[in-house]
Length: 129
Image (tube, rainbow, N blue to C red; front, side):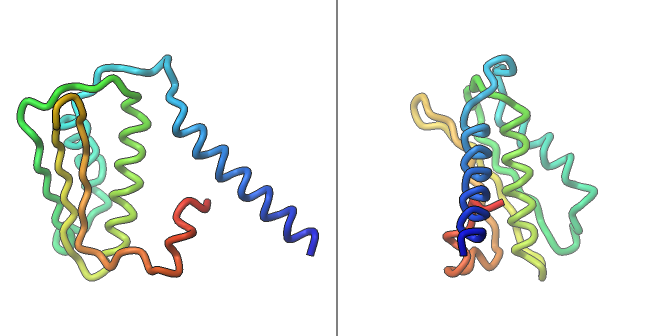
């Protein structure tokens, strides 16, 4: 029983470290980022792995979107991960849409898919590695 507790503690520590590493931006790589351009580039990177006969990628860029100071590599990786998860949630096909927007000084990326969602019994595991 003690071995299981220790293993779970190690796993939780690893997950927490990953979250902290991701949330702590690498200040040396902060740049002004055009989110519309970043979404376009990410979709281009994903094209070879998407069956376009089953999955439609739709981009709704917001015109005149302000650039943000961020780590473009981390943003791109997050967008890739979320998009890949969405695609896996649509095994019969569907639509993945990404919309950028701005309200006052805040910018955002909204991702929506027509997949089956996260089963309730798995919702407490979404940050597990």
